[in-house]
Length: 90
Image (cartoon, rainbow, N blue to C red):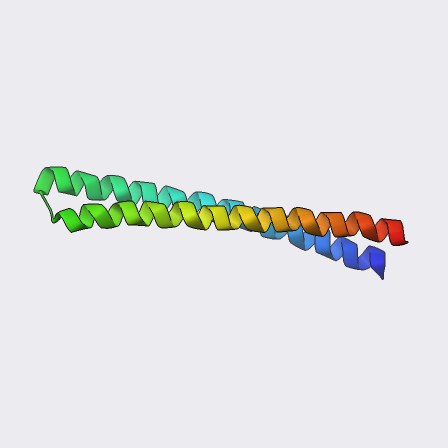
């Protein structure tokens, strides 16, 4: 049971980390692209300054979410540690 459970955990862990990293990169890219578009609108059309401020908030949200994804990655390392302990118990 231990080996099967650990294999499942490692495979799922790798999939979760890959999803997190890919989604994190996508979210940051979206925020940066949107931010550049919003800044361009601000310069070209002199849109409401609030829109520009909200753009900075979007980038902050993306960075914070990215850090959360990295935390998930750290938790994955904890799962791997459990895997090592499992081998010791076997």
